[in-house]
Image 1 (spheres, rainbow, N blue to C red):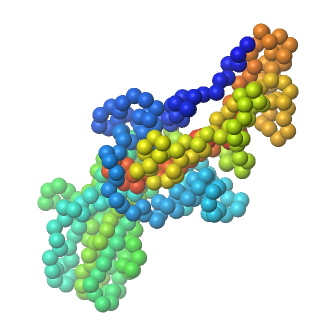
Image 2: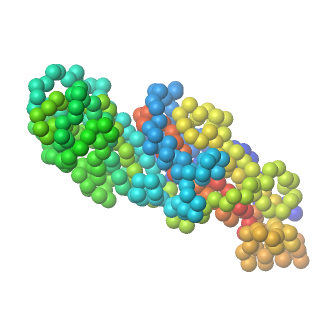
Image 3: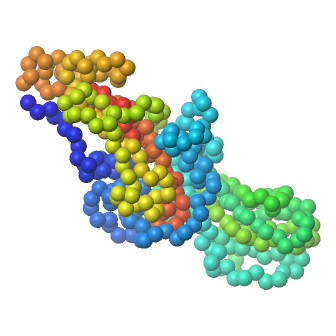
Length: 369
């Protein structure tokens, strides 16, 4: 009697991986059917990237977050997390906030800003910055919205501090309300301002677009500064991707190969992003070990192996019944008993750098159920 638990084909495995993740509706046109399209939507992309992304350096903070969060990256490279540290699911330890999606969003107002004239002392210019947040889904709850700016000044010596004001930019001539003011001691390091609670309220969805007017004025008369770069670091929590009971990855390697008739165990399956043609816009990793479960759950090896996952009592009962009367009940199935997460760093269709964390994507241990 054939076992009800068969080894899945490669196409079916890709489809199952895609179905593990929530699939938001397409923003433009419906994607063609198939596993690749479903996985694209799960990554938060309505369709495949139109050619190669515009060349853009990956911000160092995004690399740090990826290497800190991705278990497979930490496993193959130098350990970046202190020994004994447990990464909490759906929490960004380095930023100190809850979240499983991080976006580094570039200022879209820079190409349309007119050249700055030679302003007199004390009459410094204002700059309008625009951030496209249309890719943020309504289910996501922002936990940090950090405005990051780099300024440059032509003065030989910096004045004794600056004052930054951030205003809601209106489409017309009337200025919007002032969102925040803060003292900036120096311009030698990037200037940061927290917008969550100022630009929009806590526990609410992010707006579709954010237009801000920035003004930086010296606290004593001095030369004006120049806005060199502005970006938004947005951290959100998508509860659909959050599994509070996720477990840390074990250090044991899955078995390679093995016959279908062997005992239930983890088998190696590597998913390469190059093979599906996504290597131009997926920054890291190049692929990941998805693995799968395969093997028999007959008595006694699969049910009493040392160090393995203990089977459910129902699985033991089914195995006993199958041994006594093979036609009465089928064997229990070899299924995942422990899974762990992956992180993916990629360019979205707006060429923003996005880090998404997915729970339960890698099979670490199999058992009979």
